[in-house]
Length: 539
Ligand code: PEP
Ligand code: MG
Image (cartoon, rainbow, N blue to C red):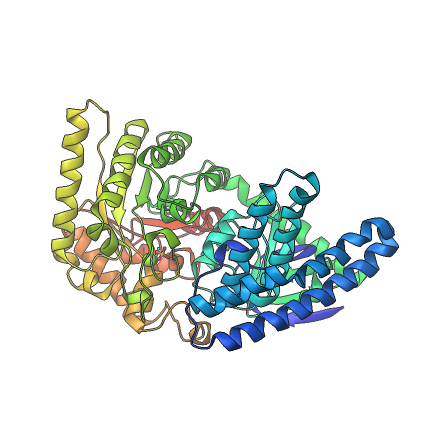
């Protein structure tokens, strides 16, 4: 039994088998290199390791499945020494001046396509082998990889890092928890873990050797226990049962109003990233969806989702929410949410770069496709739209013009749509300072405290080194929240919080006394917050 510490993302407990996850080949990028010679050396080193691995596999297979079957690993090792294969890798590295991973991937693709086209069945079968050996070398070059859809049984995923797109692709019903070496508690991957109600630890000194071993994530203490002894495992199993019991008690709050003792009603909404999360919202009795992070729809795809594809997703969410309000946040990519097909230049400072509404107002076609899809979905329930990273009144005036154009187009084509309130996400100090002016233009405000804290304190939310001073309770942030509430109320619009701070139960009473109208939180926080709301007074 060994114990490792990390930073907890969600204070739950999980127990199960570890699955060590390594990045997939699809992420291989073509990179220019200064020194092709060094790349060739890297390739040679990786190849040597691959041959060693194949020898080990041969030995294991010999015992497990016999000599005839084990031979395949010998054949693979020989293929790696094939002169044509190696010449191709060297040529790509040298002539194109690119990285070894890319050269191996290209060679693997070319050779396997060539074999696949042959008439001879024997050579046809070699196509898979070439692919296999290339993937092995690439895995070594990149520090190992595999497909994110790896969960064939419930498991705790352990990985160096997880991108939001990888996290969303995992089968949530089988993901018991995850543990990473990198990442910060305010990253989107961490937010996803909270949304999915999955215990997670970051900053753990992970080890590939753990693959297949039983482990426990204790999110309350921020520890990972690998190969627990029987006594510890049983103790934690009891804890898990207790957690289940307290969930059952909270379940008694289902169906009750989100109202303070003195009668102030709070919209207690949920944050989601996909259609799959709606079930969790309903299970926790969310009164609506206060933040649908629509960009995850783009992150899951290899190309721009069409208007029709988006419409189907929004419509499904809206229909499933059966009349409860759904606030869709328009595309917010950039920073830690990168999408290859957008072909965005690498930036020195992406958090302050070309992202969110800046991209949408620059690439109007993408923006319009999304807005049309949302307006069409609004015919099926109660929909609102909000816009991320706003810094000026001009932006919102321009957005409203585009929305008007879309409504006109839909009317002309005889396509139905509903009444759609428009809101601004307050995520920048600029938006706070002009919230009196913005409030005249829109129907609601939703405060994105994750980014607002980042930009107010000048602390990169992705930087785990700064996690201990990324302080959403900072008086500067709390004063800004008060200012936004007051300015919103002066113009008669509602004001909510959809950043992670909204789920901080130590502040629920403070927010309500400040006058907040809505809190949008990860589904698992809805009932604990309902309990607090019902026990306090707003005034
Ligand atoms: C926020 O910034 O608080 C927010 C809700 O948006 P995101 O976390 O998706 O950037
Ligand atoms: Mg944000």
